[in-house]
Each structure stands twice: as C-alpha cells, then as structure tokens.
Length: 151
Image 1: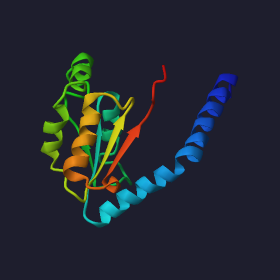
Image 2: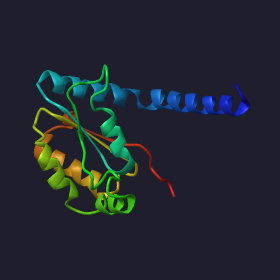
Image 3: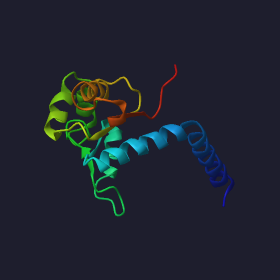
Image 4: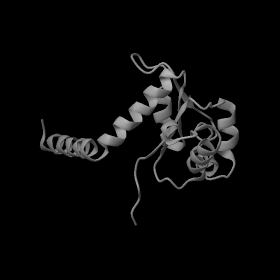
C-alpha cells in the first residue's frame, strides 16, 4: 500500500473512532427509537435534500436492509431538474409541507432528516412540521447534521 493510501486509511479510522466515542449514545438511542417504532407498526421515513437525498435513497430496497424504510424523494430537491433548481428549492419556504403531506407520516412512524448545515429551509421546515403534526415526542424524529461550517 502506498503512503498516501496508508495516510488516508488512518484519517478515516480516526474519524470513525471519534464518531464511536462522541456519538455512540445518540446512535444507540436512535436505534432504540426506530426499533420501538417498528414494533408499533411504524415506518422509517428518511428525508434529505441535495446530496443528502442519496442517504434517503440508499435505504431503499437494500439486500438485508430495513424493509420498512421509506425515502422521501422529490425531483425538485434531488438534482433531477438541475443543481441550481434544487438549491433554490431547498431554500424555499413551503417546499417541505407539500412533500411531507404526500407521504402521510403517522404518529408511530420515525422520520430521519439529514442536513449538512441545519439552516436550509427544507430540512428545518420538515423538522418543525414533524414535531408539530406527527412526531409527538423526540422518540419519533431524528435530525442528523452531518457538518457544521464554523466560520
């Protein structure tokens, strides 16, 4: 293995170790929420805009995966109609309301929202709507902020 591959491997292993150390309790709690939802007959809805829609799509129909996963997909926010249109759409108020309404999320369902920044309108609005309408406790919805830009 070349030195650059070894260095990259070390970097990746360090990141994974930090995630295990710093986020393990949250990951276990999220798994508990999803499990409890499943045993109550709930579905697992997954929402993300832009590149994060790939995380939602990844859960769909995977061999050995969670059969009750339901990605929330829309061509307006997933680059199917172009990057500029998707970027504009995810920053537009009201985009999540019509989209989530289409998926008929119920009280026993769990909603995972992926966002890079936690500031774009679509994921923030999705979290607000979920808390107000379907997810009566934090055990029903999980927000994952992948990166916080500092500066």
